[in-house]
Structure formats: C-alpha cells, structure tokens
Length: 394
Ligand code: AMP
Image (cartoon, rainbow, N blue to C red):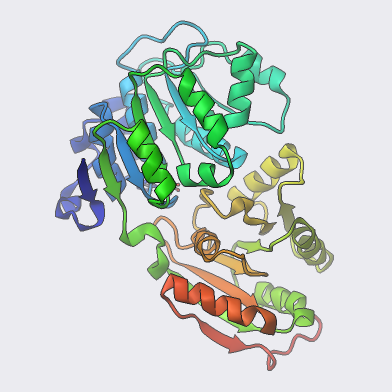
C-alpha cells in the first residue's frame, strides 16, 4: 500500500492541472471555472485515478475531493464509446439526497466542453421513481443514494454489470447511517474487475475493514491539516440562559453583517421553531430537516446556495458533505451530542480557503458537554457571558 500525506508534499507549490494529464477540454473548463491550481487531494488522486488505480481518500468536504474523483472519471470515460443502453459506466454512491444533487452539479459543471456528450444523472429517494426510470436511457455516470439505486435496479431501469469505476463518497457516514446491507447488495451486483475510489472523513475500523475487502493495492491519500480547516474558523461561544437564546440569536444576526448564516439545532421541532421565530422577526429564514418534503429540502438548499436565502436552520442532516461557497458564519443554537458532529457542523464555514465564524450558544446545562467537545477537538473556545448584552427589542 502506498501512503501519501498530501499536506507535506512540497511539489504542490508548482503543481498545475496540465501536469496531472487531464484532457484539454477539461482543462479549458477548469480555467473558466477559476480552478487555477489543484488542491493537494487532486494532485495525488487525479493521476492515480486516471491510471485506474484504487484509491482510499481520507478527506472531508472542503478539501476538493469531489473534483478529485469527478475529473478523472470524465477524462477516462471520453476515451471510450458509451456502454450498452442502461449499462452505466461509473457509479458514485453517496449517503444523502443533498449530496447526490451536489455531486451531480459538480459533474455537470465539468462536463460542459467534453468532446462527446456524456449523460449523467442523480437519483435519490423521497421523489417519484418513474421520471428517474424514464430518464435513465443513455446515462453513463450515475450519482445515487443506496436505497433508490437498488429500487431502480429491481425495476430493471439500469444494470451494474458494466461499471468500470465505483466511488463511495462519505463512506463513513454511509456506515453510520446503517447502509451496510444495502451496500453489500450493491457490491454483489458489480463486476469483480473494476476501479474503486473510496472517500471517508475518518479512517475508522469499519472503513479499514471495507477497504481491505474492496480495494486492491490502493493508493492511500490522507489530507491531514485541512481536515478540520479549524485554523480558518474563528470559534466563539456565548453563555446564555435558555429564555434569552432566541433574542441573542436575533441580536447576533442583526448586529453582525454576515451575508449568510447556517444555524444548527438538534431536533426537527426546534429547527422549525427557530426558523418560524426568525421569520416573525423579519429575518429571511427557512428550515431544513428530514421531515420536510424532498422538494422543500432541495428548494431551501438551492435558495441558500445561490444567495437568495439569508438564514438556513438545519438539523445535522446538513452537517456533513454539503459545500456552501463562502459561507461566513455557522451558529450552533444547540450543541450536537457528538463532538465529531460539532466539528462537521462548524466545518461548513472556513471552507475552500476562505475564513468563517462559528458561534455556539451555551446554556449552563450545556457547559459541561461543551467542555467535552473542546477537549476532544483539542482546541479551547473563548466564552463570553451574554448577560450584559442589551437584548431589548430583539
Ligand atoms: P469539495 O471538498 O469537493 O466539496 O470542494 C470544496 C470547494 O472547493 C468547492 O466549492 C469546490 O468548487 C472548490 N474547489 C475544489 N477544488 C478547487 C480548486 N482546485 N480550485 C478552486 N476551488 C476548488
């Protein structure tokens, strides 16, 4: 197994996308999209993936990992003629619907100047299956959540027997969400000889087990320093009573000049409640959680991503994988139970090399748990008592 710790590789400095061997049509799109230099994960993963090697990538969203598998897949696919109809060539499996949509957007943006048309599609549950079955004609690269993928296969809408490249994105999250049985069924339908690209935020025991079974002589790429991007995130906490949390939240939104804010709360009820109160106070806010329809989830996230929505209030559904460009601020209205989720949440800001603020509102009851989180994170956060702040009229 070859280990590469991209963070310490000096040749990054002079690296360019040209040197990675990508097709000219892709290079010209990259330059139009202002991708000037490859990120470390891309420098390591792209040439290996073009050479059809298996890869184990330990990296979080924000590291540029999506392009590190999307670009070589596109590069390789345009060298071949399309497979038989409904026999997809590359399969990208992701844990959430939002991530499926996001990865597909990246695929689409990099596909616009290819020398031949490559049809791509994202499929996920929570929406009607029929239109997806109909549109499957001619698809070569598919992004899918596990359950809907299996449903489509059962309906003979697609076949996995010609898949040349499999990507498992956010594989640790898939394990946590209990997708193991579905993943085993999917793996059983794939041809034995294929390329496997596995990406995970952490190298847990579960991931090591999967890699041993799935990957052949892989290149392992670990993006260490940027992993939490923690240095780019300015963390701050306010001590506050439960009754003053709502007014303090509105005070922070109104007095800081953040272009956009992502707020996390723990339960569906609380998320709805916080968003309702913000709207009643004249702040443009929407809620996103698992009990919302897929249509509402997609609309809220897309409004937030394109800047039409100022405040998005979410459960941990949005803590992982979702990339929001230049998000300046994340607020923890309530703390997550797991310290890992805290790091994932605040990691929605301070992404792609632009700084951000992460603010946590801490009641006396949450103080002990907040200390546990800081200890695990190995970073102490300044706590300001909010009693002195005048919240009158908030
Ligand atoms: P990802 O980790 O794939 O979600 O990517 C995080 C963000 O970085 C996305 O907004 C990408 O568009 C952006 N990005 C990825 N690679 C590059 C690059 N080489 N140059 C500039 N931006 C990039």
